[in-house]
Image (cartoon, rainbow, N blue to C red; front, side):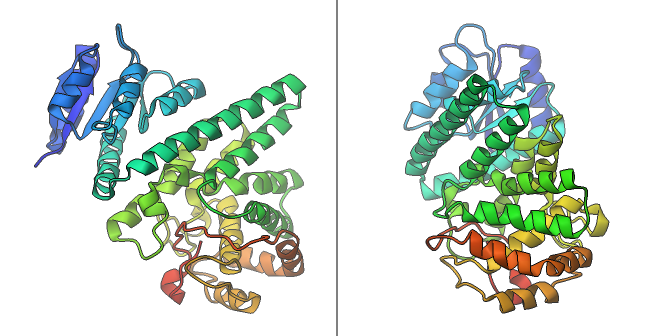
Length: 382
């Protein structure tokens, strides 16, 4: 049975264009011109996904989305908001209304097809598990974190803090937001930052670049905000389909951070996208190898794995420092860049001091699965 896609847009030309892009995928396309009757059309046709224009005559796309997400029977239908506005305010309003994804006009055919497929796959898992409570809790959490970010930015503006400090404060808060579904202390974020700084300095990189890598590295997993709890919090091995969803956190993170002219955010985007690439080309999302992996990502990859190995997780004990060292050495040249590993061990005393200084006050219960070295060593890494 083919998935049903409802396209809601008051422009016939826009509807026909989106329909033409999707029909080769054998979807059943239902067109609607918007208006107050849109909710009843969705109820009548029960589409698997709604492509909804943000700007409509009369009732707006935000109002339609809000009504859909408040309806107990319709709230699980993914809504992809199509808009010509790519600014943060539009995205925040869309998130508050309950939108599941965004597309910017003019819509790219390949991106449209990819996002529709991804949303449909996520919907299948949501329906299987009936995660109604998850949606409710996630909506509240996103609103709370959004409010915190907005309040922080307002306070920064009122206090006339420097632009650099504004960036750093926002990045730190965003990294905390990325971790809000876990029980870890802030120690994990601080350790990743300081490990990355120590390795960067050991490589002899310029001081300014070392600082930016340190400041950007805590955002490596910001994309997990977009991963469903059923996948993110699963305490055992993921299925192949679940793993494909899990791997999307790298692309989601890069998309969150993309489009900035600020060098710090550009580095954060690099790290979010490529910190699961491996030196031998067996990583993801793009299977990059060697020097094709950004240097910033190669640095954070090692910092992240070392912290995962030496931290307690619900699904594994703490590995001793000597065990972690052996795993890293065994994986140099395959997982890790030998140059990065060499720099890491040159400052290993500093690494151990950082580990002790920012140790967690309690054991974390972070369920996020990272492939890391699990295939080589039969373990799951954070």
